[in-house]
Length: 98
Image 1 (spheres, rainbow, N blue to C red):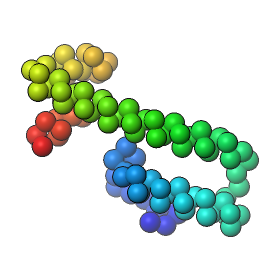
Image 2 (tube, rainbow, N blue to C red):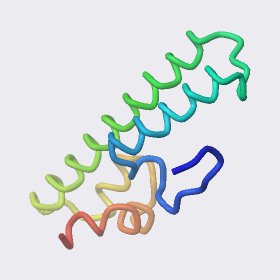
Image 3 (cartoon, rainbow, N blue to C red):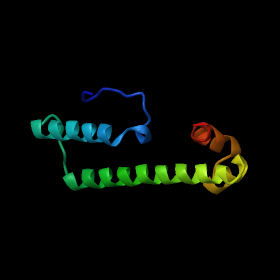
């Protein structure tokens, strides 16, 4: 993957290895002077927040799967997540089908 390349994956679907590769590319670009960074602490915080979001997404997916296995409807799951029944089903149905 090269800087500026696009991926067809949603960021939350990137593997840890893919994320690390992107981070390494950005770091290398900074070192070469291709990218100017005003405050590296800001980027570290952004990376930490992204890691927490990935962890939270995995936790939500596990909870949805558990809820479905326990017999919860998509409407109940959607209500707990603050989305519609259809939104919950569209987002998470792939988990149940696997």
